[in-house]
Image (cartoon, rainbow, N blue to C red; front, side):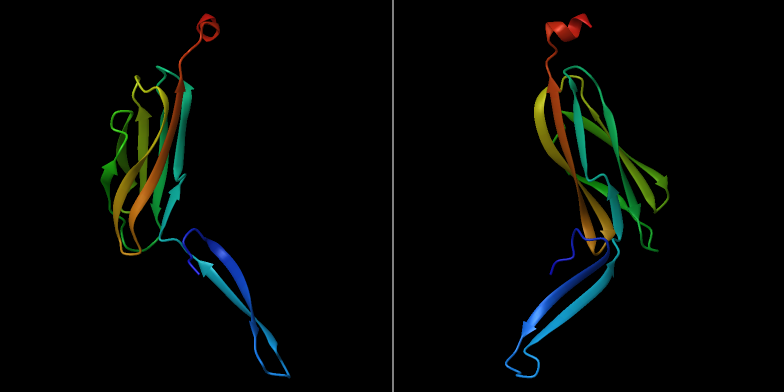
Length: 143
């Protein structure tokens, strides 16, 4: 079983069938408390508005280990639609990444920012970005 995507206390059970006439079915229970070494909130950002509007959204990244967290920007495939900046809020512990769409961004788009870390179990963080900027209509312009 993969534990990626699970957080907190989980419980899984399995039935084991055997040819033992006394006890041909046994139920095994596995309980675990899964801690993430890095918390990312939210993992996906949505930008929605009228064409020409400029929106800023942020993602918070928290290192949950004793070891100080180091993050570095990786690949970013929305350079023609957005900008971003990384701020270290609490040294080695808390980071915020601010994303702002460019004023000319229009239509629907989606992309990713990949961030590398110094944590062995989470060497890379994927932040998803979705945008939808509609052309304003005459009715919207009169308001």
